[in-house]
Length: 225
Image 1 (spheres, rainbow, N blue to C red):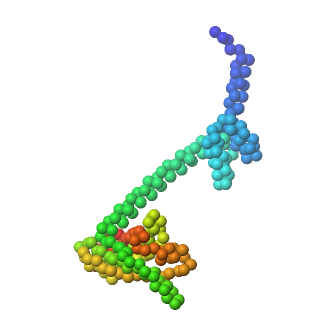
Image 2: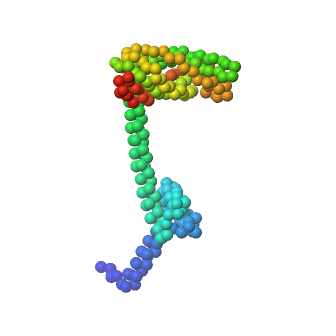
Image 3: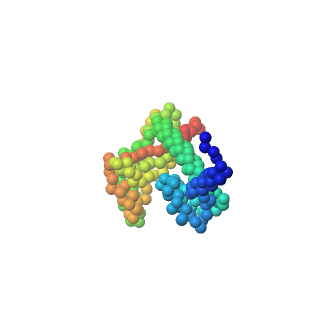
C-alpha cells in the first residue's frame, strides 16, 4: 500500500487547486478583461454556448444588471435559464395565437351561415372633381328572423389571394328572414393610389371577394357576433 506523506498531500491539493482554477468558466466576470477571457472560453464552450453567453452579458450590461462576483459559469447558467424561459413563453404565445385564430375562423363561419354577402357587379364613374368605384352587392339572410342591421369587412383579393383593398360595410336598412336584398355602394377613387388603380382594373370574375362579418343585429333585439 502506497504511503501518503505530508508533502505528497500538499502537492495533491495544490495540483487540484491549479486544475480547478484553470477552468475559464470559474473566473469572475470583469468588463476590462472580457476580450482576453473570451479567447480562453472558446476552448471550453461550444459556438452556441459562447454566443449565448456573449448575448446575455451584453443584455445584462444594457440593463445595468449587477454581475459583480459572478463567474462566467454562473452567467452561462443564467443565460441558459433565460433562453428556456423565452422558449416556453414563445410556445405559449404560439398556442394562444393558434387558439385565437381557430376561434376567429369558427366565428366567421358561424356568422357566415346566418348572412352571406356577395359582389355581383363592379363599375367606375368619372366625375369632374371626384371619381368613384361602384359596387353591387347581394345580401342573403339565411336565418328565420329578420335582420335589422349588420357590420363587417369586405376584402378584395386577386386570384392568388393577395389583398388588393378592403371596404368597411355597415348596413342598417334591414334584410327579411330567408330572403335576399341588393345594395349599391361606392368608394372614392384616388388616381394616385396603386390599390385603387388595381381594383378598378379588375373584373368581378378576376377578384376573390371575402366577407368577414363582425356583428349581426336582429329585429327581435338579439345579436350574433
